Structure formats: structure tokens, C-alpha cells
Length: 222
Ligand code: C5P
View (cartoon, rainbow, N blue to C red):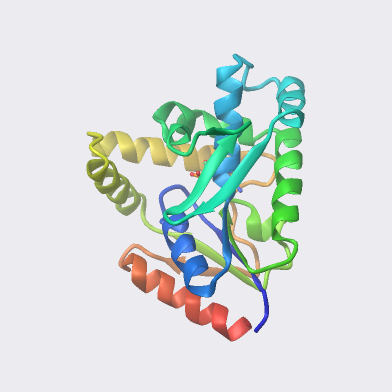
């Protein structure tokens, strides 16, 4: 069996992380949530009152920051300088502000180097926006996962309900569409399907069906 790299990209709320966790678990691979790194960066920048377009200050900040992803039974814990920020980085404030931070070249340079290092021995499932196009260009399996914006907003709303957070469907839809637009329109490593990625429309599929599809494709490559 080969320790392959699996890259999963796609827009917000397509179910990438849920599916990536299942696939990683079933294969005994490490799951790496790259969005969490951009979120952690945004969290610390807001905490330090750094302007989110100040590339130089953000670069300087990142060079003295420890962002750690630690595997846990429920997926992954995220630490910033030893502080557990797993839940905090999911706030609306962080979510809305990440695309601005993620558009900066220096920020991406530092985080992408870290991502490459984490994946260098393979046996990883990495999800994000630019994994197949930039971070793991040679990944044995690349998936581009999407679903209609309505379906993604519906899933996000269900998710929120389960966590006891009330949310407005139309507002969720608008937020998701705006974040996608920012991620697709940025100059550096925009969200786009890699030429050699397999497109998976998950609108009418369950999480388990999507995971099964990816698992069977992965096994063919191993
Ligand atoms: O995947 P998640 O929704 O947590 O990502 C949050 C944000 O981080 C995205 O909207 C995007 O702006 C940024 N991101 C990125 N490149 C990645 C992963 C995430 O620019 N590989």
C-alpha cells in the first residue's frame, strides 16, 4: 500500500472537512484542515489589532506564531501559541474576515510552506482552496467538491441548529456566496478546479456516499 496524498478543494460549505475526516480515518491517514490555519492567523491578527491588509505586519506576526493542528477523536484541534482555538476560529467574525487575510501573498507563502512540510511523507487528506492547484500539485488524488449554494446554506443552517445557533437562511446564502466570490477573485492562488481534479457535485449525495466515492478512488491509487 502506498502513502498517497489526497487533495480536496472546493467552495465554502461543500462538506469538504466532514468528508475529509471520514476518508482520513478510514485510511488511517492524517487529516489536515488548511482553512483552520488561515482562520488561526485571522484570529491572532484580530486579537493583536493588526490591520487585516497590513501584509508586512501579518508576515512579522506569523513568523513568531505557532499554529498547531493536533489530531483528536473528533477530527482535529487547533492551537495558536498553545491556546486551544478550535471553537473560536469558527465564529462569524473570523469566517467573514479570513478571505482578506488569505488573499495576502506573504501569509500564503508561510502557511503553504507549513502545509507542504506536513504532507511531505504522504498518507494525508488535505482540504482547502488551492491544495490541488498549488500546495500538493503532485497529489495522487485530487477532488473538487461542490454543491449548489442553496444546498450549502441549508447544510450550514442544519449545522448551526445542532450547535444551538439560530441562523437566517437567506443571510447564510449571501455570506457563503460572498466568501466564494472573494476566494475565486483573488489574484494569488484563487479557488479554481485543478485540471487533473475530479469534479464531485454533492448536492444530491449524503456525506457517506461522498466519502465512499472518494475512498474507492483512493484505493485504486494505493
Ligand atoms: O475551509 P474554510 O472555510 O475553513 O476556509 C476559510 C477561508 O480560508 C476560506 O474562505 C479562504 O479564504 C481561506 N482558505 C484559503 N486557502 C485554503 C484554505 C482556506 O485561502 N487552502
